[in-house]
Length: 338
Image 1 (tube, helix red, strand yellow):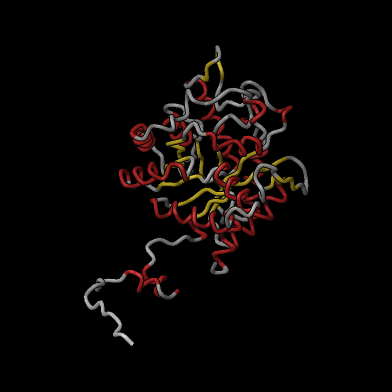
Image 2: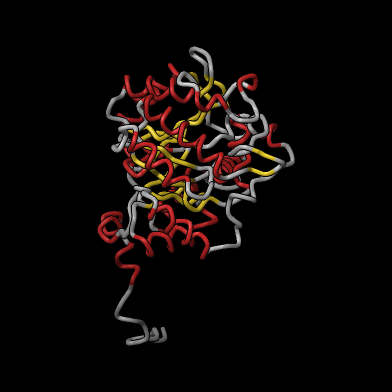
């Protein structure tokens, strides 16, 4: 038998695969880890009692009544999820051009906040500040002469923020993208004695097509019709502008900033975190969630695995926390060591 060839010195001394050989060594060298405490569970609330209504465009996601939400919130807290973000499906008959239902102290969001804080006092509650769930036209602000006006909208948003703070909201999260709204809301909250309420600014929110299933879930898609939000949400092609938006929000008093959407904007997330070092969050939006779940249901990929991978990638890119519809399932998998 011929001598076997020797390759002494032909291979490198450093072999990165050594540390990948076993599960325990992979754990030792892991650079980023996903934890349940990184997650904010985004939820939809609807009218009624004992109601659980599936969102067709978001497999596995439900609109639930306030009593059901309180029960599920307790489960989320037990799994180690630190906070939930509440979005309402406002009945169509309560919507009007100026979104007045946003100022109703007994609207769905305020009911949900009170119920969750009563049931699970240690769970944080994040409330969206914007008018689109309440307007008959589906825009985030007031329309005057065919244009979404800025300053008049900000005045209403300040009142909406106070309404939610009075209900017990812990974090006000303005998602409207009006200029100057963070400073105005911060001043309004402080003057009303709510200086402890935090502000999580949707600082870099893009005019994205990935929001479609969300609009279906809150019932604003039909109201918006063929309209869009490009006069106030950001152009997907812009990056430097995102840094300017974040800088303004920080100067105006934001405690935390957010990038939205998530996966298509990991570069924005990284730039924002590296530039400012402020607590930085990312929203895994409805379209991202829906496409991974749908592909999983069709057997095109491991949907659950893809969602877990996406969440970890947000951490790797610099996110301190992630808003996701999949928080409960992710927390269960993490608890099981999956």
